[in-house]
Picture 1 (cartoon, rainbow, N blue to C red):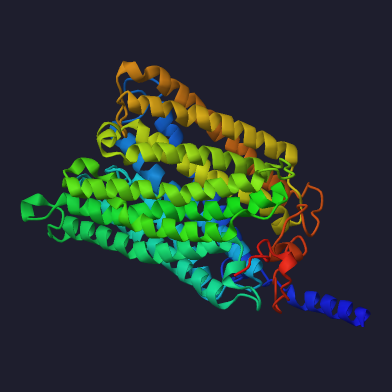
Picture 2 (spheres, rainbow, N blue to C red):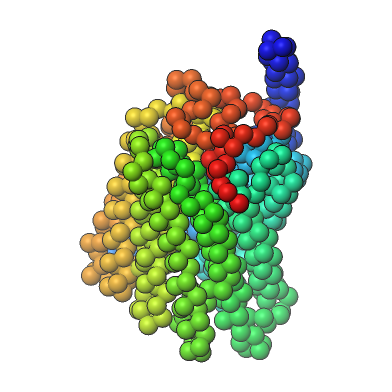
Length: 543
């Protein structure tokens, strides 16, 4: 009988590992969740380096006071494009790539629920970014009104305006389709026995993020369409001369913009909640509390948007509401940080590269959280608003938060994807160089901001020279450190130089994805797996 079972499993494996024949069919027309996940991740890596090159232009210009290297207009284009490329081209596609790869494997599904749409939602992205990046070569240059696209400045550009707006529309469509697909997959395709409260936290965070995406992307689409008609069709939504209100744009934009920052961090929370228990060799402390905290953050994200606008002349009652609501978000976030620390507490910890990135994530993200609490205080924000303090704050939550979590996830799951272990020494070099240099890059910006250096300017008072020089040196060192990461990926995936990975890869890793062989077969679960609570990271949760 055992022999028959083995044979059946073997035959099944042979039958079901058919990849589409030919490069074009597989990579352009394929609907397999793993291939599309890979495409998203590669696209995001490319955008990360393009966005990073733009950041280096900014930091090279700011190395010394005075106008040094680039025209002020081009500098403004760089600050605008850097943000658009990093947010919509690097961070979000990376998390969608991780979702595509991991969610079906984590819930025991054969694929995503809507595979054809999945292919489409990826292939919209390269074209959107071609539109966006092409503006740099147009007469009048790229968009230069800041990534927030505030009128009237944003619509004073040349033809770049329409290109940027259409690119944003396409990115939004891609995000909405990706989100619908993730919700449909999680709610309909779980293996029998995989209750909602037994799902990995990563799956939970993505379910909640997907609802956020569907809620706010149409709002962004509406606001940029109004910009479009203001510029090309003579409407006056945001022009005071025609009876409009430029501040209305800020309200609509930030109603999208604040949930958007949680769209970029909630999946990172999920990643940390998968990695820390594995290397602490303990179940995640307070699993249910983690789920409820994620949902609370998502809810609160909708009622805090005007903290970006304390200085526009809001009524006092409005200022107070948004101040308290913003501070309230610190509570569920604090619950999460506490639970990660409690998971590590008295655990048998080892410090492989994914764990190092996860611990750095917890510490540095928390610093970003505290500077956010400072910005939430209205009278203080009057001082901090539009200074480098704000830049320092959101780079601590986005670089050492979201991007460190993405890197941790890549190191954690790469052996499962490729069947090869990455080079641990290189990984540790990448971690230490990144962690040290990222703090040299962003920590001085807190001091610059507190001393009053404004954001988005190509030139500055000589009083700010020293800290800017330190920050720029850190920036170039951090940028170059990422080449190690790119090399490590090439080394593992293309040159296949690492040791063969075992099925479980990490001692003490729990979850359905670790029941599959490494590399994960092209079709994961053609028959739903029988779920044994002991396999699950959170199987012992009593309802």
